[in-house]
Each structure stands twice: as structure tokens, then as C-alpha cells.
Length: 323
Image (cartoon, rainbow, N blue to C red; front, side, top):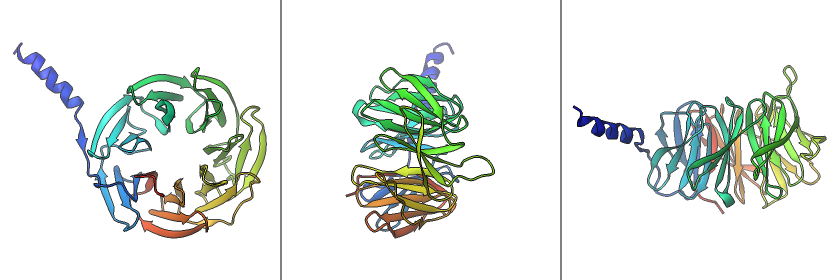
């Protein structure tokens, strides 16, 4: 029995590091990767045919970030670890220890840093994905969620939902420089190069219909952009001057000129839109209660396709950078 002890310990350790296999399409071309909230699964959607390949998981994904063409980091708010999904191999393995409560993640390619917000611990974590090592964890205000980067000043902006504040974190020193008050029950953030845009639900009993624009250096509100009910997420990139905002109270998308902040007419999508991403020609919007994916032509700002999805489609990642 004494000789069996080390052998059994090795078996136990190997079991704890066991890799799970999931069903992944052979190619990621024209594929959208979608996490679902109403079922513990991840789906791969063929954007040309609408065909869906789904794999069950033992946890519900609350955030996903692609760190290279073959690797996606997954987080679940009820899990105390991140997971690595290798697309070519179809393998899922545990990664960094974070503690339960991870809401959202944000990746910076140039220094291999993954940031996560933890709403239970009220912290923001720094994870070096190349070294597979957590290098820092910073205290914030109450319930941090949405994040945005200011690359030129090496800053991370963090929206604190229950604190109704925005934290400004110096990435180099790994310290919070300041935080200042913002709209009540905030959600979603976009940095336009000078100002921070924040959406959210607004105070109880008075649902918000504005995007609030703040100067992150002074903490002062500089503008309000009126859109639909409860703007909660944004998408913008360097290919155009427009920012796209989803409003899950009015089930609509708005196209906003980032310079003069003029607003388009609303474009209706499925009920309770929850995530928005894009490529050079299209915008993609998942609707949690509408169980659908809207594909929007960026130039015409019209829906080019709507695909039926099941089980509460939530977060998205492009399988490949579509042209």
C-alpha cells in the first residue's frame, strides 16, 4: 500500500489537469463563435449557410477573448479559473486561477496581457498569456465590468456598475490613478481617442436613453448622446469614423458619428441585443431573448441577414478576420 501512494497521487494530479475535447469545425473561415447564456455551450456559426455546430460545456461562458488565431480564453463567472480553447485541436484546458466572479476580459496583443474584471472580488487582474502567469490584481470600486484601453497613455478604463464610477488604471505601474462618478448602473464603454463613452441602465425608476461622454483626465461630463432605451455596448474601429451602439431596452442599433456625435435612425434587431462586434464590412449583433444573430451592412446600415440561434446567444468572436 505504501508503494501505491505516489502512484495514486500522480494519477490524481493527472486527472486534475485532464484536457476536455469538444466539437470544433475544421475551418474557422466565415465562422462566428458564440457563447450561450441559457445553456452551458459554445456554438460555431457558419455565416454563409447558417449551419450551427454546438458543444456542451460544464460551465456557462460569460466572456471570451481571442489571443491568437488558434487560441481563445474563456471565463465563467461561477468558475475560479480561466480556460484555453485550442481551435485546431478542439481541446479545452484550465488556465489561470482568478477566483469566481470574472465578468469581462480584454486582451492587448503587444505585450500579451489579458485583463479581467471580477465583480465578486472588486478587482481587475493582469494575466500574461505567454508566460501563463497572473502578474497583478488591482482593487477597484464596487462591481467592475466593462473595460477600454487608452494605448497612447498606457491606461485602462474600467466601469464599476454598483459603484457608479469609472476607474483609471496605469498599466505600467499597475495602480489605480483615480476614479470618478458616472451614470448610475453603467454598462458598456468606448474610448474615442480623447473621451470615454459610457452607456447603462440609469437610475431605478428612470430608464436611461443617453450615452454619457466623459473627459477621463478631469472626470467631467462633456456631452450626452440621446439614443434608445438602455445603451449597453459599443463597437468602433479605425476603418470608419462611426461608433455602433446597441440598446437592449429598445432592441435597436444606432450608428453614431464619433466626431460630431450625430445619430442615425434606429435599426431594429432581435429582442434584448447583448453583444456587438464587427469586421471591415459588417456588424454582428446577438439578441439574447430574440435567439438570433443580426448581420448588418456597415455602409448601407441595413440588415443583410438574420440567423436563428438557440439558447440565448451572448458573446461573440470572429473565427477569422473577415474581409
